[in-house]
Length: 418
Image (cartoon, rainbow, N blue to C red; front, side):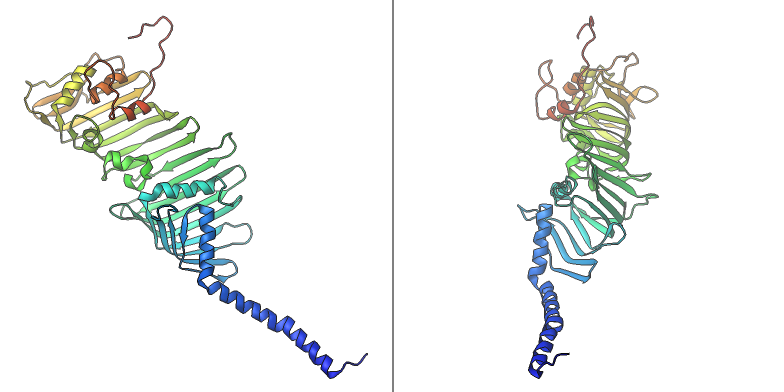
């Protein structure tokens, strides 16, 4: 063995001490300090914001374990207006080994339903693989989520799963509405199918045997605005958004429907009361109704004389059995109507006696016994939005219906056109 001077040995020991003790310790301390600086949370917020296409605000961000990340004071806001989309008090993400999905636990979740379009834009960005994730499997769980839209409504036992696969992306959500007896949770699913060209986005929903408030559904559907804030929905259905428009099917029940909101606020006639509508079958294709079969029950309520007169004149229905009254608004005790709409027109019938609207003074409106052929949909539009001529008026009232009602089937060769 060769001999080293004492000074050389000391230098070698100092070098080893610096390389294997002091330097690693300094790096660890610097790493810990860097993760506790405000800029570290801001950098993570900026990263998430770029991926989701929204503005992300974050109070604290930490890694208590190598496989766990904790977000505190998380807020997602619209990048342009700054309006809050959702916020949560605490979010914990745990990466599980062995191919298991990432587990995310959320506490204090609040969602602004008025910002649904912005929330959907972020979800759609992820499903289209535009957020930087080409493969992902995440499970979300929140004991409670509060939906903010007028009167806050709480959801219980909220669970969701997001998967990005080679051929499709999908997200499923199950929940129960707080204060509502639900034997089974409601379920909603969104699928982005890349097996077709171009890819299409589809929706599937099922409320189970219980009903949920309509305002819990995305405002873009317009159900709460059209049917009233006290309306409820139950049933199931599916819909695909293609290049040609929406296509899908649905069945279910609508309760607490505000007829004043549905009719009076949109047309020149008056109809008030609460209705229950059973949708036996609804099919739509390319954004238009193919078939719509439903049964409506309502009462008590009021109806304008103008609506009764228009139904008699345009649809050929039977008017009041009692002598005509000079009142512009008439009270009714019961509305009973079953109707079917397709490309041939409108078929309808009343109760077992043929009455559609009845009061204590007798029948107000009834379907004639000899009504065998479907009524033209143009006549329905003329009844709802009467004009001065025989044509369907082009107005604000008829525009949404013209865009969604079925297109009449072409007449067969040799068949006369009415």
